[in-house]
Structures are given as C-alpha cells and as structure tokens.
Figure 1 (cartoon, rainbow, N blue to C red):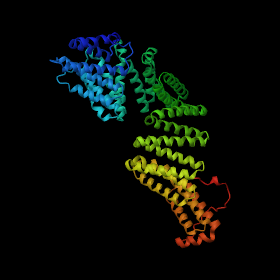
Figure 2 (cartoon, rainbow, N blue to C red):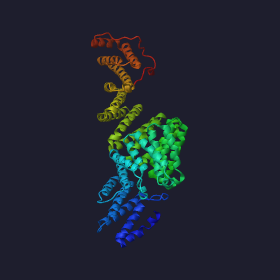
Figure 3 (tube, rainbow, N blue to C red):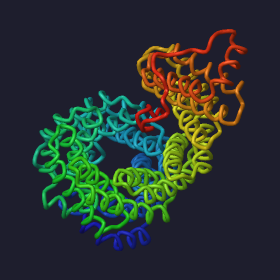
Figure 4 (spheres, one colour):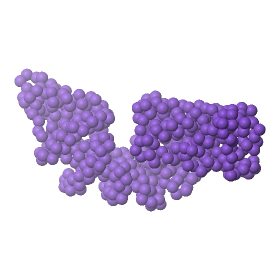
Amino acid sequence: MGLVRTLLPLSRAAARLSPRPGRRLHGAALMRCVVPYRVLLRPPSPQRRLAWAEEAVAVHRALVESAAPRPRHRDDLARSLVQHGYALQLVGRCEESCTALDASLAVPGARWSQAQRAFLLLLRAQAQFELARPDAALGPAEECVAACRRLLPARRDRALGSLPRALRTYALVLAALDRSEESVAAYEECAGLLRNVSMGELGRVALLRVLVLGELTNRLRALGRYEEALSVGPEAREVMDPIFLWALPDTARSSRVRLLTDLARCLEATGDLSAARTTAEEAVAEARNLAGRDRGAGEPSLVTALDCLADELGELGCSTAELDARREAVDLCAALATQRPDVYDPLLAACLERLADCQDAAGDRSAALRAIERGVAAYRRAADVDPAAHEPKLARMLANLSRLRGDDGDLDGAIGDAREAVALTRRLAESDRLTHHALTARRLRLLGRALRRNGDHGAAVACYEESESILADASADPGTGRHAADLGGTHSGLARTLGAAADAHLADGRTDDAVFALRSLLALTRRTDRSDVHVRCMAAFAQALAEHRDTVVPAWRRETGEDFPTFVYRWSGTGSEHRRPEGN
C-alpha cells in the first residue's frame, strides 16, 4: 500500500493520457489506498482516506458515464461509493455517509458479493448508531451479523469486515437500547472469536480486539459483574503492548485510559481500595501522556481519570489529595467548555458538584457555595441546549444551592433557589410522574425549611402539607416502603414548623391562629408514630400552657369545645435547645 500511495501521481497521469485503461488503473490504485491491506503500516488519516475515496468515486463514475461502460465499471462505482460512505463516517459526517450508501445501492446493474452487502449493512448500522438512532441501527446490525455468520469472504473481501466487527457493532447498539445482558453476550462471543484468529489476521484485528475487550469490561462493570470485569481487564491490558501503542498511539492510549478507569471502579466495588487507587493513578498518568501528544483527545480522558482518582482518594480518606484532583478536573473542564460548551458544560457542572461536596465535607462552606453557583450556571447552559437531559440535574443542583445558602444565612437566596427547584420538578413530574413525583415532595420540604427559618410559617406549613399529600399519594403505589423515610422527614419538619408557628402567634397575641397551629400539630401526632413528632407536640402544648395559660386555654375551649390537653411531662422552659428534635 505504501508503494501504491507513492505511485498515485503516475496513475493520475495515466488516467489523463489514456482515459479508459488509465482511469481503471487509477481507480484500482485509489481503492487500494482507501482499503489498507498491510497490517504493519499505520493507516492513513481519515482526511486523506476521504480525499482518495472521493477521487475514486469520480474516476469510476466517469467510466460508467463513458460510451459502452462494462458491468465491472458499475461494480467498481458501487464499491467506491461504499468506501466513500465509510470515509465520511471516519470524519463524523454520518448523514452524508448514509446518502453515499444509498447511492451505492442505486447504481444500476451493479453486482454485489455477500461480503460487500454485509459490509454495507455494517456501515449503515454504524452510521445510524453515531447519529444516536439505535432503533434504526438495530435492524441493519442484526442483518449484518446473520450475513457474516453465513459467509466465508474471499481474500480480496477480508478487509471489508467480518463477524467480530459485526458483533461489536451489534453489541454497541444493544447497549444503547439498554439491552445490557444481550450486549455482553455479543461482546463475549466477539472476544472469543478474536482470541482464535490466526497470526496472519491478528494484526488486522488488533485495534478491534483492544476495543472489544475494553468495552466488554465497561459493560460488565455497568451490570455490577465486577469479578468478571476484573478477569477480562488483564487480557485487555496485555494486548496493548508497546508495538500496538506505537502503531496507534492516540486510539490505543484513549482506550487504555478508559480500561484502567473501569478496572479501578471494579476494584473499588470489590473492596480493594489500595489497588483501585494504584490503577486510577495509572489511568491519570496515561491520560497525561495522551494529553501531551493530543490535547483534544487527552484532556477529556484526563478529566474522567481524575474524577475516578478523586473518588478512590476520598474512599481512602485522603481529603487533601482528593480536593486537588477535583480542582484540576474542574479547571480542565472549564477550559474545554469554552471551546465546546454543548459537550463539556454538563461535565463541568458534574465536576463542580462533586468539588462542592468535597469542600462542604471539609468545612469550607463558602468555597462549596461558589462551586455550586458555577455548577448551576453550567447546568442552565446545558439545559438550554437539551432540556430533557439536563433539567433534572439543574433541579437537583438548585436544591443543593438552596441548602448551602440557607446554612450560610442567605435565606432569601435559599428560598428563591428552592422555589425554582420545586417549579422545575413539578414540570418534570408532568411527563415522568414515577421519577419526579416524590422528588417534588422532597424539594417542597426543602422550601418549607427555608421559609420557616425566614419566619414565614404559613407558607412553610403549606409546603410541608403538600409534601405529605404527595408522599401519601405515592405510597399508595407498589413499593410503599420506598417513601417511608421521606414521609417521616416531612412529618418531622411539619411538626417543627407548626410548633414554631404556635410560638410566634402566641408571642404576637394571635391566640386563635396559635390554637389552629396547635390543633394541626395534635392531628399530626395521630397520623404518624414518629417519637420526635410526639415529643415536639408535647413540648409545644406544655410551653403554651406554661407561658400563655390565661389566653390559650379559653381560646382552645372556644374553638374546640374541649379542655386544653395536658400531658405527663411539664414544660420547664429550661434545658438546651438541641435536645428537642430538630426535624427538617
């Protein structure tokens, strides 16, 4: 192939001097360059391959449009259009690739071998997959696998594709459709075939073998089959030998970073934290090496590796090192987001959220607050581009921001953020009630807490009561126990708010309002068996009786026609406040 590339100027000259045989010779040379046959040479760049494919299409089209074209000219035009579609995929122009593949099928009288048809199906499946249309990719992928099982390609067709390539594409499509178990089965069959290839074919499928073993490890990890993933991982590391890394440095190193990250996660899940940290450090070192060669390919991988390393350091209690790793990941993401905000703003927001959690755990609330504010801004930008994907994350981060602002004393800001989080979650619940209905209740509880701390007890009570109503409604569905903790938190917060409301009303002389709050608190004790709610109820009644007997007792009798409740315990007004349950 290297010699053919060198002789391309001569074949072009032959095509000009002798149009018919010269064009056929030049077309054959171009196709030889587009489809590499030697495994020890580095493949041409996608841009060069695309240029050769376009030139091959033009040469073969001229032959077909000439006087008295031969059948083989139509065959060559169809094959060159398929290779043009493949080259377009390599540079990310998948819509144009589909057009070229359709054009190849439309060549009148073209003859197709079984291997060529299988390759066309493979390319169609890959193009639809890259265009995020897994449903459209599934049919061609299944047909391609079935076709490859039936054929034994001739020597000249071996470069077009094979059963392992078809199985890998099929596995990718199945994974995108959340059919993970089937995806793993396809990957495992593909890996088994690649282990048994001959020495002559080994170089041709080397990259495919690396990709398949790495993706199989990732899929096994996603399914929680960590031990199996750890058994595949060493084989994947072994095939990335120095020769392979030299031949395909960027692709191989990027795959190696992903593999090492997956292995670190699996080691963490199986409890081997020391090995997980070591493997994550290897991933970071490999990503730094890749970033030094190609920043565009290396920096995204470095972000992922740093995030993994930070998680392992956090598990080991190395808080300072964890914080450093998370800061570096944020800085890298921020730089990438300035160039590709549509791609990296969501990743930046996620990294900022983890950084804020780390800073909050370290007691640096102001730094955590700044990180969360930046994360909210990043999620807003991401939600403008893709609301369905990022509005749920924006709502979650707004809730975190409200909590931090409330703890920092900015109650107005906390209320505003919580209101926006509630409004977003309500809207999301309209289209996905199962996921977001209970989340609405949780965020109403957060808003109620901020309102109570700001002295707006009436609005806070309304939030808690709506939260209780939502959770009671959700508890009627199967899996009632899922909401028990949330319902208990809502009852605790409502009890605290009603007690505070009664205190405030009595202090301001609004006895009737205080009685209403106390009656609501007493009714709450009959709806829940939480001990902290009962204690808070007894404390509220005892305090009201001790400090406002002359006004609250007559008002209670007037409103209820009953005697004011008395309890075994007597409120003394002394003792530390923290002994009373705090609630939410």
